[in-house]
Length: 129
Image (cartoon, rainbow, N blue to C red):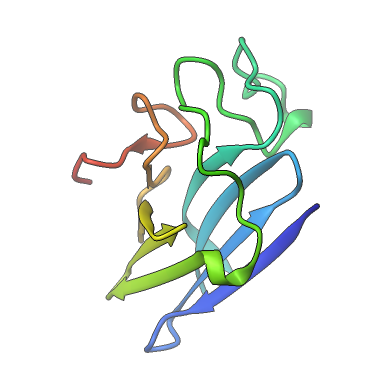
């Protein structure tokens, strides 16, 4: 199962796109046609032991063991599972009623609830930019 969910900011300047390709899920903050922030949300596939980001053919990458927690709440099943709160150039993404990720213009990567440590796909949710 794969899907794409898109939400526009109140001022129409930004769009948040969530993509789940059946293997991994990511969120992208766009300003116009450009991506200004992105973050890994969860793996659907088995968590790789070794990082995939050394092999660009595996994009979008699954977060490896030690960098991300398992998603014990399950993947997004419908648009109702996703809520977005906007604060200017910042999108706060709620999945299953929980603050899941924060994307802010210029943060690459953004922050995610399932991040275990800062890495190239996601930063710790509790850390400031």
